[in-house]
Length: 449
Image (tube, rainbow, N blue to C red; front, side, top):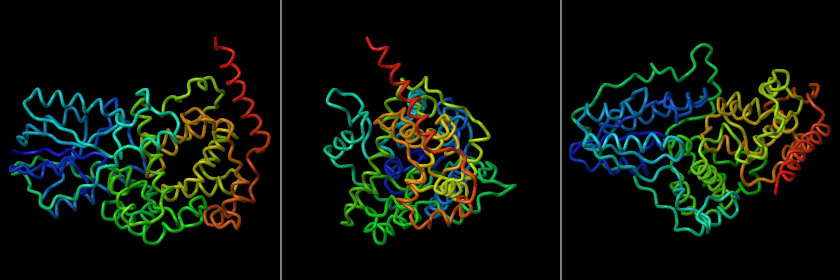
């Protein structure tokens, strides 16, 4: 019996249920990654994410090669490639870890197609703590507010303990041809803007493990007090590793608890990620339309170069906004508190459509995933779930005074921004945004029977 293991957003060996299952097959395994940017249910990844994917696939290929397994790369429509490769290698079954976004429609169709060809197809618990259909309200529906959602998660049976990496793997004798990773041109060439990403990050499962260990031993004690201070190095920086599945959330959960550190706030961040993915599972695509339909008529502005351009470049004149946007461009990352401030500034002070900001983050963040990125933008814009944030406007000047009072973060990333003319009047634009929100809310009330 030969197993074809389909790697997706789970670029690791540990806690990989499909790989563990296939490792027992006497005919060995074939490890396959498909870059599918053409299926209707897939969203092509952004430029920073493409850089990370190249590096992560390189590390995964090295890890597998050390165990005698080549990583086969193919590019195209997964529904065409999987049956083709399964036939090429004579696979008896195809195994993968589940996805919880729009792509699960592809997975469902593939199961039907493969089984029709006499090839078994099985999926396993994927990259969430809890599978979405297991956490529901008393009425059996999806949660729309985080606090009761997370309470339900904590009251549920504990997340599965992570599986160890298979102790031994055997390659199938029939290995198909593979694309060359360099031919995919995931990394920038001319100009090569990824130097800051390479200086900040080391993708791969081993780096993720080291990062979690360092967080628990060196940073966790200061996390609760310093998590909102962007100049402090107290975060785990695990989000891109979780996005690409170089480490599973179950591993983070159980390793953190075993370390005995006080980490309720840290684990609740896993809960927020979980909430985003459960919301996407129940509602479909999040980057195209807001979840709160009453704000469909909000007078958002589209892409206006004279306002959006300075925001993207970090040239608004507001130190915390500019520092965050320049950190993002340089490193593919931004502190969570600063993400909220920059998003609020764009959507509420500039009244720019949240989808414009979401698309920019999608292209520039190394950790942008199809749930958390649009989910968080909707939350800030006030059109998502768990909302009363329509009236929450993050004043960037006040936020800087509170969370970067000595100017360490701003001085590091945007030392000149304080001297620039300010792009907007904060008080005036705040009142303008609140008036627009109230108009929408009033119209919604008037339509009620």
